[in-house]
Image 1 (cartoon, helix red, strand yellow):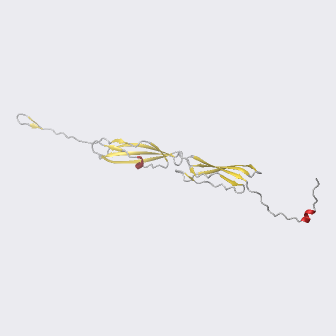
Image 2: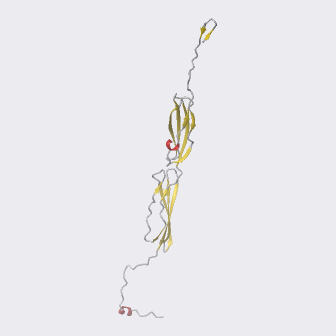
Image 3: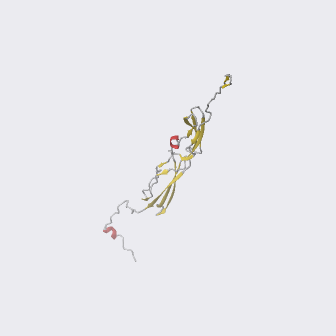
Length: 207
């Protein structure tokens, strides 16, 4: 208010409107990361974004995931976008990229090498196998038989199993079976006993 010497006065009014139009500041955003397919991809495991606001304070934080398939079943990308809001509904965002990969080969339980008799060669049985992410690992078998001894009855048999998961990771088991023949022949029939009279029918061989 302004007043002159004759007490005349006048006034003016100023209205100050205080607003909060500034979004929160991101003070921490989880870094991009590459992880194996058996690891936890949740925000609880990999971290949350954090923010600060100069005026009204933080009111909330939420996130959304966009999943992009990769080259195989257990390879993909998660784009996680965090949204931070203040009490005046101003929002800001930050993004974390999570690359999920399957680079670990299957883990088979390989059979031990064996030495067996030629009549006891074991039948090939696929070994057990586990994988971090693929419950149905493909198994193939190749067998090389090198039985060149004792009339093609002894030698070695090399069995190679190959294990392949959905992402093309492979592992192998090699088993060598050594085949021997250490058993003496057995008579199928008894030899007929010969009497002395029978033997005498055959004169001694002339020298």
